[in-house]
Length: 176
Length: 196
Image 1: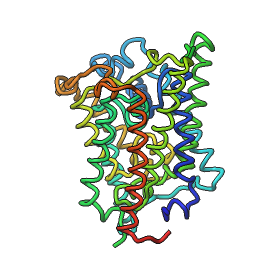
Image 2 (image 1 turned 90 degrees about the vertical axis):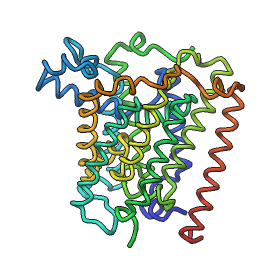
Image 3 (image 1 turned 90 degrees about the horizontal axis):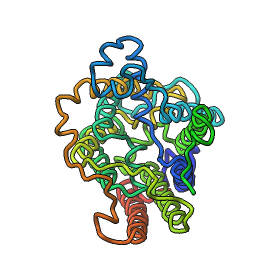
Image 4 (image 1 turned 120 degrees about the horizontal axis):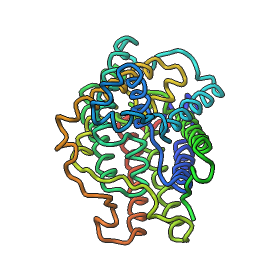
């Protein structure tokens, strides 16, 4: 059905989705909260800031609540989950021979163009995820499963933003 | 009764071990489902590959049903579970910005991590951008603090909003997901042909 997904031997989406759903449930069941990613990256970035410019960290309220004074931004579950995501992704890729230096890009653009757009998209994603208080994992998946109104509104906004812009930037991804 | 206080059970270090394990499974499932591949993720927005939609909504529905039944059977205390509070406007605007970031950058925060873990350079550049965006937000949120706290509705859930039983919402969301799967498959075959 999905050409690329089949060629690359990725898991059937319903199998992957069901396993992810069970994991998400287990996370809630055991730890009381769902999955996350962006928040962990945030804390790791703040930990680096705290090493380089601790005075500035103490004076900026949003980061001070994570790393001000004696607070350790890394003493939080989501940081350790991010470490696990990196490990799990690496092992999965290793088993399938997918761990290799390469750039995924659309057929009409060069790797360098792809890098520039990846960086720009990353900036928007990081900014937007903090504004929305969570990313696709922490808001859409986790909040969606516990039926948070805000998470569902967020989820439709992400898809709407993506679909509206997709047509204008189709050269980035589509065949000529 | 679940959920558990992991720090009381295993100590701080022990609780971190649990989170690394959960993260490991999360990263493994994401990579195995193809979410370390920006081409696959972006193709969702052209109806060409439907992996994102199907994995995500299958996961939401399965987790939602399991949470609902374990609560109904008295195994899980729903009141102790973290429900994301609703800040409607920053959630919607942040979501739109993220949608734009998704189609330009090809990843979301979690998927970029497995892309980095498998040495994809576009994932690395996305990750650097992600960190940059986070820092920009942290430095400038003071200027938009009233907007950032607007549309606050508390820990509001869909059953509360719609004034119906939780089971009804579980049923409706499940139906919506199944309809979306069928609808997107149909759209895809219309756009790209019936070829398997």
